[in-house]
Length: 107
Image (cartoon, rainbow, N blue to C red; front, side, top):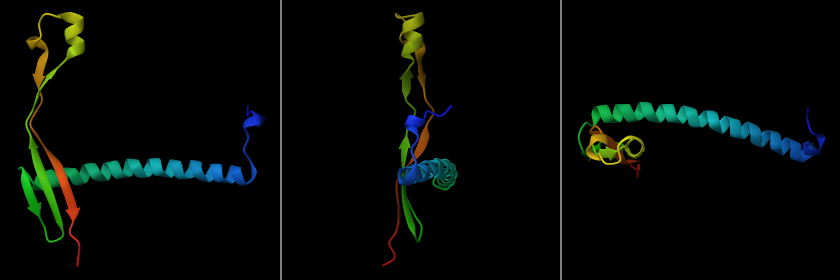
């Protein structure tokens, strides 16, 4: 049941309702933007396969190569074999990440 002492009505109620709607809309936009960003990132990585700078007539993107790294699973290490460090290391895969990207100004 609604606690009337927390009921906000009148102008503040309208402002709160609008803020809640705006927040909800923003959450949906963030979700859509994340999907769009992931799709665009996939295409960029597909076309720009090596580290370096790539240009079109309207845009520039710098790609940076990151080599895989050896990581340490410290939770497993601490729980099972505190004396066997090397056994719980693993190497991540090589990857390419998008560095800087900009749209060229049309002056």
